[in-house]
Structures are given as C-alpha cells and as structure tokens.
Length: 387
Image (cartoon, rainbow, N blue to C red; front, side):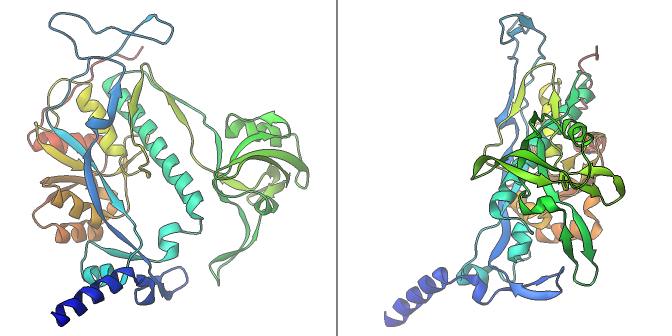
C-alpha cells in the first residue's frame, strides 16, 4: 500500500512539473539546444460538411430551388446535394508539456517537441493568433473561389484590409542570421497590426496605401491609425523609408499579409470557429464541389484531407503531417490525401506512424479529385456556366 501510494504521488508530481526542466530540442536557426516546453500532438479529424452552409436548400419533390437575397429579391442559388460520405479536415494541437507527458511521449514518433521559437516563431502569442485566424479565413476564401470556378460559377477576387505580416529588415547579418536594422516603423508598428488610415486617408487595401505613399518621400513622417489585437485603435507617427530594392520607392516598412477577399454569386460559409491555419484549404474545396454537384465524390465513405490550396488549384505543404496521420488513424479513417509538396521523407514518416492508413499524395485539386474517383467515388462535373 505504501509503494502504491508513492507511485500515485510520483505520478501527480511529474504531471505538475513542466517538461522544460528536461526536454530539449534543437533550434536550427541558432544551432543550439533549447528547452522544449511544448509538443505538437495529434488532435482530431472533423467533417467539413457539418460546418458548411450554402444559401440554398435541398429541392423538394418537384420544385425549383429559390432563395431570397437580403433585399427580398429572388436570387440564383445552386442546388445542394448533401453527401452521404464525409471529407474530414485534420487538426493538431501544441499544448504545454509536463514531465509526465514528456516521459510518456518521448519515443512516440507522432509527438514532436517544440521550443518557444518552434511554437511562436519570432511573434508574440497574440500576433500568432491573429495570423492563424487570418490564414484560416484566407484558406476558406481561396477554397470557395477555386471550388466555385471549378464548378462553373462566377467568383471575383477583391482587395482586403492592410494587415502587417512582418517588418522589413534593412540590414541583415549573415553571421548571426538576425536583422541588424529594421525600418524606422518597427519602433511603433508590430506584426498583426491592421492599418486603418494613413495621413488621414481611410485604407481599404494595400493599393490605397501605396497611393498615399506615392505623395511622400523617404524620411517624411505621417500619422497612421492602427487597430491592434488586445490594445484597440490608436494613432502613431511613422517615419517613412525607401524600399531596399528600389530607393526611389517610399514604403512604411512592412510585408503585408494576403487579405484578399472573394465575392461570390451566392452566400457560402464554413464555420471554422476558433480553429486557425491554412491547411484545411483542399478539404474545404473538395467539400464544396461534392456538396454542389450530384454524385458521391467520396463514394459514400469517410476520407481525410490536408493541404493548403492556391488560386490556381495547386496544393501546398502543411505542418504536422505525422501528427495528422496519427489523428486520422485514430479516427478510424482509412484514406488520407496529403500534399505531394510535403516531400518524400515527410510522407514516408507519416506512413510509418500510421502503417494501416492509405496515404495518397496530390499536387493539385484535380489530382485530389482523380484520387477520390480512383478510390470508388463519382467524378463531379461543372454545374453552372460562367456569365
């Protein structure tokens, strides 16, 4: 009984002690071992269809589908074909690790230790959260555009807000792999800031900011109104500078985030809640195509999909493939589409984590459709003619 009690106490203590005391991981940028207080672990596989809403209804036995716009007029909306199968997007999580969880998972290939920089990069947690949610919004918009244009509907890309992704480095040190001198705006602006006004002019896009800057020279100081997460709205005085690659061009000194929006011929939404990141883009696009075209793209089965999606339909790499393969395997799904851009080594590692899972790599949206058709699904066809 005493031994059992000591074991219970030991488990409780190790569950409370942070893993940073023993866990170490290589910081490749600095080429040094650092504490690894976090870990990337498998999370879940979730059906996209449960989160998809289209401004249309399933047709009744003999009626046409008619919806109404906000002003009450009739709107052209698509027929929705609720799929029997599921296309799941896959998530990972990056929680803090205790000494106990580190000890349990230290040899598990589906668990990856993370340093502070691995988890947050050079951003603060608030900045990373802004970018993560913005990347998910962009992934949803791009997926809608790609899917609807594939189906034959009209969709238009429009400029978005001015959001700072990172500050411009004017002098970079190759010996330390760090920036020696940022643009002067770095003193008052941060990644994640949304610029609302510049020199008294409201900003609706990066193009509008460029127009304002064209009236100024490097060294000028102008007021910029900023919206910062956790702080609110405020105005700062910003010294402008010249672009590193073009001294004649005046810049604020930041790299903008891609915030372009998509204008669609009807309302469509994917409720992603608090989930961030761009890796569900391909799953979103496939689900929209499956839902707005007759037939079963998945053949009525559940499949998991991961990969970013670009406007040209190409599929890009994602993070945490091993963890996602494990999550898919644990969900009981036996087919997983992953980006070919991930690379052979990463895909091989994912197969080793889940040897019973069929993993197919795809490079484009059409490749993904071909893979699902080859696995027993029905090939979708365009259902509309662009106007």
